[in-house]
Amino acid sequence: MANADHARCTRNESVSVNDTPRIRRVLTLRDLLLYGIIVIQPTAPLPAFGVVDTVAKGHVATTILIGMFAMVLTAVSYGRMANAYPTAGSAYAYVGRELSPHLGFLTGWSIVLDYLLSPTIGTIWCSKAAMNILPLPYFVWVIFFAVLFTLINLRGIQATAKANLVLTIGMTAVLVAFFISACGYLVGHFGWGSLLSTKPFYDPATFSWPLVSTGTSVAVLTYMGFDSISTLSEDVVNPRRNILLATVLLCVITGVLGCLEVYAGQLIWPDFRSFPDADTAFVSAAGRAGGPFMFHLMNFTLLVATVGSSLGAQVGAVRLLYAMGRDNAIPRRFFGFLDPVRNTPVYNILLTGGICIFGSFFLSYQVGAELVNFGAFIAFIGVNLAVIRRYYWRGASHALPSVLKNLLPPLAGALVCGYIWWSLRSPAKVVGFCWLFAGLLYYLWRTRFFSTPIQLTSHISDE
Image (cartoon, rainbow, N blue to C red; front, side, top):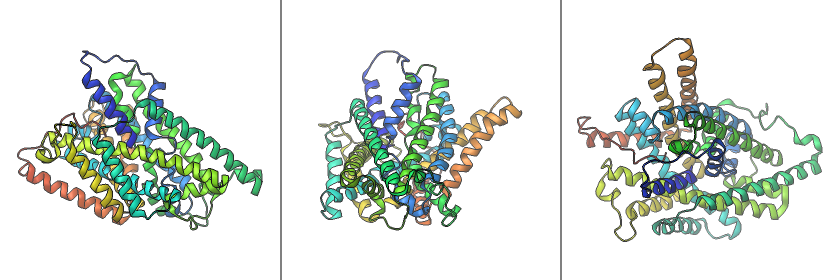
């Protein structure tokens, strides 16, 4: 999700500079898939591996597949709404236009929680991984990475698509090396039969559906950023077909690859209770399979990937806050301020940097990831309901074909996403609902109890 913000911000800025009357449709289905893979990153499920493994008691592969089912249903809805609003590209816009401006604002407010905490969990993970390289105290690394992200974004430096492509190729090469090491370790210690096992999917000794559901509520972090494809609607050849198809295929590819990665990790380290540190558990599994070299290679690879992801996440949070401030949805004097020298929203950058430090001291990676997903799943539920409203409720026909196409898939998506959302642990739900309640109170004050509703514009198009 974080690199999605980076790539989309770059694209939006380049388009704004170009004064040509029309964007040429040049992107194919293959181009969209490559873009989506770069955005999500091939290593997406690995930072959360240990947390999910511990919560779900060894069923990480199952949580990845359940999350894939929910995301595929939601991807279909995003694809259909991208056809209806090709320049909007955000959950808040879909919900606000199809359901209610009030619900649209609360959806946008929930997205703010998602965006603000994404760089925070990145800071937490980077700090834990850096301690494997240089064992300085945790708080030193937290301050280092939070300040690093803030200073880089204050200078306005952005990663290019070419750099992201090189990074993705490098991560893929490391994964290939890991799979080779994993196969060698398993065959050498347990024989060829050890490569095939059902325990990563279902172990009767530890399986618990409520725990697997809770694990899934964290594991879906793997797929964050899949909706970025919808922001390219104006650039795509045959967008009505390719946007929807690419979004669905991206979720399937991410889910299958992620399932293979965590499946290997679980076979290498079957005891979910014995990780040295759950936050960097996959690094430990890689080290068991390939020795110190693979440990440090995987640790460095995931550290670099998370640094890039966190930089992009902070950019996305800053742009979202600035856009809402510019619209005066939140106080314009602070959030809509641009530094006249750097031409950057300095206050927002400093604020998000402070949240990274503060949040990293008081939140665990798991709680932060759950809060990110709390906000994201509100958006996913809203998009599915928006599809029902537009294509079924307001449609010309309510006959069986319309039910099968326009009602059942988005309804299933909303229900599955709602179930996963509700499976979040109680602390995350309490904090999440407090955040929503604060947003509701602000909205009531800002609109004078709905008498002057806030009209969010298409500037906020990065979710």
